[in-house]
Length: 438
DNA sequence: ACACAACATTCCATACGT
DNA sequence: ACGTATGGAATGTTGTGT
Image (cartoon, rainbow, N blue to C red; front, side, top):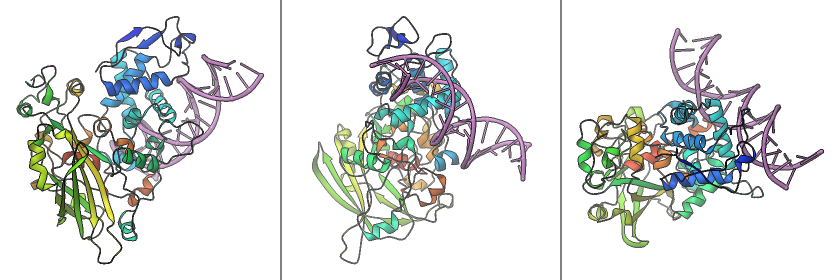
């Protein structure tokens, strides 16, 4: 991706009034989503402040570099990231990126200030995806029993909590509210988890010994396709995915998984599976939870795998507690899974980072190695890395919130969708703050 | 002149190294 | 325990638009 190209044209909000006699406007970044982010910022500006030398503080060129840096930034899987939702060294990374990209220096403090402003002004939903950590939010509780398991009393940080471009007269919208609205927008069934897959025939690139930086995939002639695999986050052939979901509950539960598969919105398959209690590794068991696994729509998985276009399918998943009374069927957790092909342009980011390696090198198995295929890691680090998970993981990421204060972390619900199901684990681990407890 | 937006600065909480 | 580095929220300052 290249935000550098700027053309001199006209634009409605004229920055020249403050800084320059030329009217400038960015040429559209090649990637549609990035363009949307950039446009939302650019068009949302009402004025441009200037430096003493008359230049704009944040001209489009620098703004573009800022966004690009924001996308390229991959947070460490540090305690700070997990517990606080803060991103160590992000501002410095972006600052350096801006300098490398434009030759102009903006301090980390300036970057932080600008990011704060972008959050406050809500420059588009996509930008919030970039700015906000992704955190699946449980649905409102349906029953008293569910209450026991779904503690979610936290406030949310403003990062993800800003109302989506609401006008000033709009009532405050909590992140939970806005998130749930997004849930509804995406089908009303929990967070939407996108599973990045590769087109058939792209699997070879995983074997490229140098990490694939230079190899091209036959199916993606314009870019190194599967070589675009980041070191950890990895789109991959769907058949490589181990369709197992793992969840952590703070208590022993009796529950079922319910799946509904839709093709173009039409229900084509319904299935129910049981949860199996498994042993939770000590290093994952800091919450004293109980690990459950369940196969992911086992009766239909092979059909999805063999489908010409798996992205046509949508799978909704509910974990429903079995109750011995007549109180109904509390839904402890739900989500929607969709498949998608990665954006080719992301390949450039990887190559620019120069750090990618075959994902297999980064395999670790925080949950259950037996459920993992070689390319997948359910570790949080694996999910943060590669691309910016906030960009990649979720068009539904706006549906995710973030705890406002570390002190509330112990109350955070955790859902640990581990196992071989990568994007499920992605969504979960992105939060590890992120785990949902059912 | 005033309101507002853009940007800078300050303050605070936290992580981390010594 | 202390100092340092950092991100982010809060607050302050300044430029822009009307």
